[in-house]
Length: 142
Image: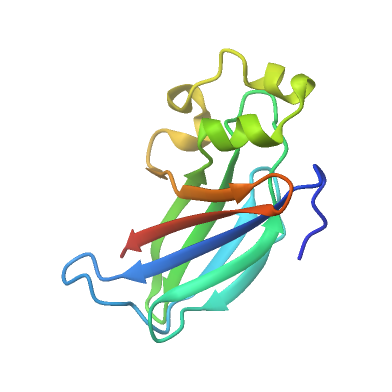
């Protein structure tokens, strides 16, 4: 697990399902990395129910970017899906101190260059709290 720079742990859980049937997509490899990061937080193969889970840290607020993490789903045939998980504003409000909240002032998901254009925007549900850690969960159709 990456040491949380804000002191807040973030677990990212993704469930891969077929976009056609809704059945779990097993055997796919998922990579996850932070905005601005070049090294993956990790790489995992989806379990028989289609789940992967990454222990990480809540990303810091960066000027010009809405807080998010990137992920990519691959099969033996290549990349099936690449997208970001934009963290909800209420989760950011729990985590960020005043100085980091100011970086988000005037920001919107639509104006972040990482979250527009060809990329698919996916917002996870986030549970937990800043003291014990947050869990971001999303089902991804591939």
